[in-house]
Length: 382
Ligand SMILES: [Mg+2]
Image 1 (tube, protein in one colour):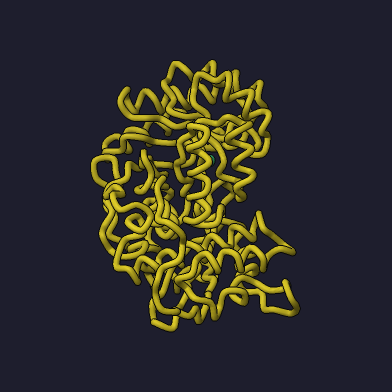
Image 2 (cartoon, helix red, strand yellow):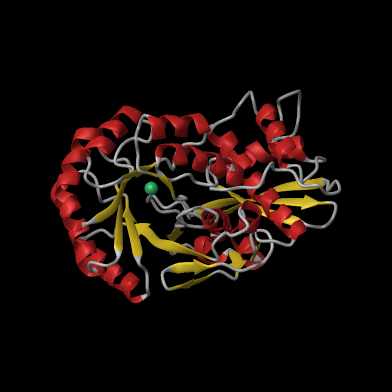
């Protein structure tokens, strides 16, 4: 990943006048590992009238509090109180202020999740000021199309997996990921799910398998032995996300490349997972790791170990836009593209990105190139 020198632009002071945390939630929540049932969007306003959007991928109620908490004493304040009045174009100063400002309850976990939304919004603003899409701020010759893999939860039974995979193939997807339950406790069912996906996708579509942190290292290696004949592109999160020793055992012995890292927030955590866990694909979620700025730091780490960085992006079109712009500036662009049915995932962000020939074709619209559909906001706002 190449990026421009420094994060500041030579420009006049553009004051942040408001930071809004917009929490949206479906009226009916089901028990499933589907993070598109609610979302937290950050909207940063400036005195120039330029507005930026970002997304926080977290427990949204808590993330909203981290943004909105009014100040009661030094260090007892949320991000809005910290950054309001600062120069929206001075990302470096804002980052330092946020990291210092959350030091009593950060810098990782939900504090970093919330910072991610602010960071994305600031990159959006910077792109709008410079009249360029964010990817061109990151890299002058960034790609204009990013291969995108369809991503959904495992259907309940192999025959339903087959139906789903046939639909994705017909729609032109060249890579598909299935994840989480019912995969996990039953080795025979797990293999049947993978076999059904491979059979229906045919030999030419990449298949990613997300185990949803279901196993220990020994069990994971047993599943690798069962799955390897189905040509799996990567096996994701076979273990608890912080089991670095386990990741090392699996990554160094598995015939299938191992992916992980969506749950982490701090550069030091990623350094441990990459250098000691030896994973092959690292999956920073831009809504958790500190936005585009945080993900750039993780991409540099991945370069050190030879791992490939592919964004985890199971949210709304806001996260998708940021992830696609960031991925477009990498050496081997690829992004997750959730196909979850939630109207928040599908309809909240209005953007010009189009899926064609297995890739998201990006526009030259400045910044992150999208706006919120205010009807969707009004319908689902908590
Ligand atoms: Mg995953």
